[in-house]
Image (tube, rainbow, N blue to C red; front, side):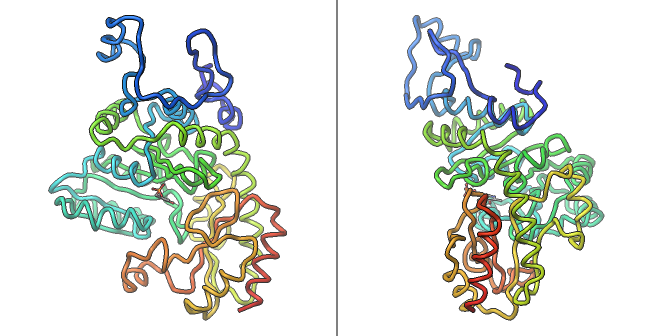
Length: 400
Ligand SMILES: *Cc1c(COP(=O)(O)O)cnc(C)c1O
């Protein structure tokens, strides 16, 4: 089945990557293949596989069947020529930066409120290897254009929906500017997922995901993804043969299972987030709600256009009026349904305090500069009944 020939993402999510013939039969759903070694009828066959003249498996650090099935499924959803999956989202971001050209003497541009660990990766690791980095407001295209001309970076990394302030990256616009300056564009599409957006179609060179989040979706597996052209996939494959940030077959199977309901879950996440954002916006204890689905959001029109009117994602963040850290913690402890766990994109609703969790590694000044206050709470709206989420938020707010 040529998965890409099927237009609807609901159908592709269910079938892509499956039904690989194995000997005498074709499994309806891909099994977990935990083997490290592979036998061939004769050494000539093994030789041909090793020489890339014949498809097959030789060692799981190169490729393995359950993992390859997942890569094929994600390639279909992300409309990518090639996909390489990783043990975690950070392993994927690390490899994407390397493949995109981050090396001694090069400059990496990143959006200001990029994921905390990506910020730390650039600041704490790549900088020690002689990579310079520069954080900038990537919602201002003219400014990005000007800075690229000035500083000649090699890579630009942005998030399609940023964390935790929910800014929207104009992927077409950034893709065009990046192309003009010969810059490789990496888009972290974790929050939007392929249900809302396919960054490669809009000019990104690499799309990355923490598949730990929406793709797996059930809070039980860690994984990372890079989608790219076939040429870049080959680069990533060769790189990973050396680095070995591979995903195991069990985790690959969990993510593959999760993908089947990704579009369904995203529909419900998006629908619930709209309802929850609206309630919070009108709540007297809430001073600010960051959500791209509000007409007052500075990039509302871009969000509608770029996400094809399918929704605005399941993430939002809000500020509790006048609350200090202690009060925010009391609110989080008072929740009975929403879970205060440091992850997102699960079927469950999850809350997080960015100042002490995702953005803990930033100094208070750095957090203040990008607009992350101590009273900010991030909410990953789950797929429960929206009225139960509303009830829980209201009862917890009434306790502080
Ligand atoms: C979680 C996350 C990551 C890191 O992924 P891990 O799977 O935790 O390594 C990167 N980017 C974004 C936007 C994330 O939410």
